[in-house]
Length: 328
Image (tube, rainbow, N blue to C red; front, side):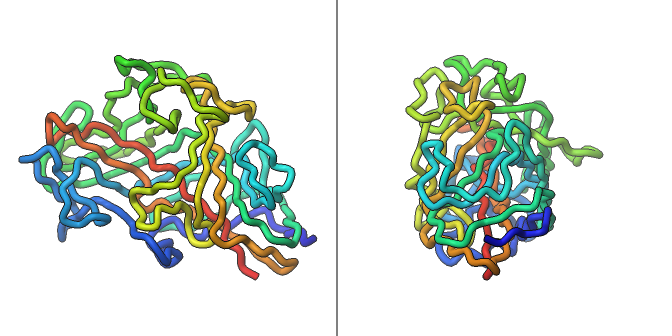
């Protein structure tokens, strides 16, 4: 067994170069004009296009945050499927218990994650496992081709505002509510972006909470094992897979509480437990070295109101795609 005398796991790639590790599938993003503005057509209720289906008008497209803020709890690779909570076969690169390791991935930059020294026993590992907060922080600045309505004003510049929004409605009226893990959550129809004729002096990070997987209503019962979902379809990849580089595969996701039991409703959802059944298993030797890929490209979904076509309806974080990069 090799012990690495390091406490920094390199965050290899945040943006742009990450595409070199994709051999199948396509990146989807809002279509931009020559000036880098999101192309809009506000004469219809499908005002944008994305580059996954070029030429097709739609009401949503994906954007890349300037900052993508994650909170890590556990990260490792496993010999048997850990998605039901049994991590006994896993070699964990880090495990911080009830605390978390916050990390901000900056657009186009690399960095390091400060962790304790770790060891991985040589062998074959067909699964990866990561446990992160289900609240994803996003700071975003975008310029639109024509004036767009944000939370309270109009303009060609749009940016994130402070607060927390969720991926699921708490009740049928979509009212605000309180998460036991994350505190006050805004009403479901709260718009996380403001727009205006110019950008403000500083742009805040907005938290997007992924608090339901099987449907958009918290009033619907959770599925078993924390609303466990096997991700067999990815609308933004032709091969329907999730992952980056060596981490490509079929993913299974569950929601956990703060004490690592499976979540039972939206209010106690605190973490995402993300298992990937890898297309190609990791083979670890005593000489292996490690890095981590975080895909931030097109990591948020920008949605427009179907009734008022120049109004932004919401911004939702796309689930993080994080991969261990192993080099012999």
